Length: 296
Image (tube, rainbow, N blue to C red; front, side, top):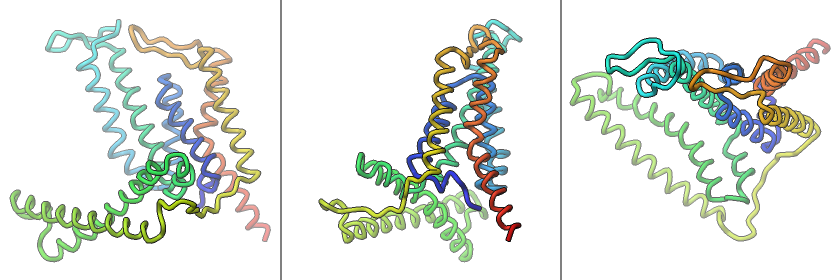
């Protein structure tokens, strides 16, 4: 399934993720947190399908619950006291609400980063930062490439060890630990050999030499300009509205936010448009493609 954001110029794609990640981490208003979480989940489901749903049910919901429970144990601020803990410290409504919002922010950022990892590939990172910070861009691209390769190789090694009776899921604790250490040793050896091969390959291709050029097939076209203008306009509206107090919210000592007025409603709608932009573009592109196919 094709994705419009991944087909855009790397500058446009990276700028979009930079805005949604920055806004998701900065704004603590409950409405913006929910809108950003829904946008991240919907985009992740579009990109990954059932895998995203499994990740949401196994990781995200427990994470919200854990953070919501841990925060009131250590943070006792707030004016609305619900009860007192056995230690004598108060349990406040504000600390619970702040814990829920923190958990929601955490999983939202993780979900956006999972989408970022799918869209912004290693070649795009090198294109974006290769001339500005070449060493850092190379490290980032190699890290993003190494993690899925390491995971795939781990499955291969585990399956091979299972065939010879060295499975980590069977036997006693000491036996399973021994098999696990053996698999880890194999993976470390594979990682070192892979690093040496990569270094030799880069050296043979002239990496680091003066005057060396890099190939890319990215072109900044009319669609990129229009979407870039839309992203900048939406982000600018959100920043301006936030400076006017339209997205202001506090949890301590009492929960209080910006009044429900036309400015805040406008900002909510604009923020929703920013978070749902990938899904909107993909739905429109799919409808256009289906219309062209039906016309044939």
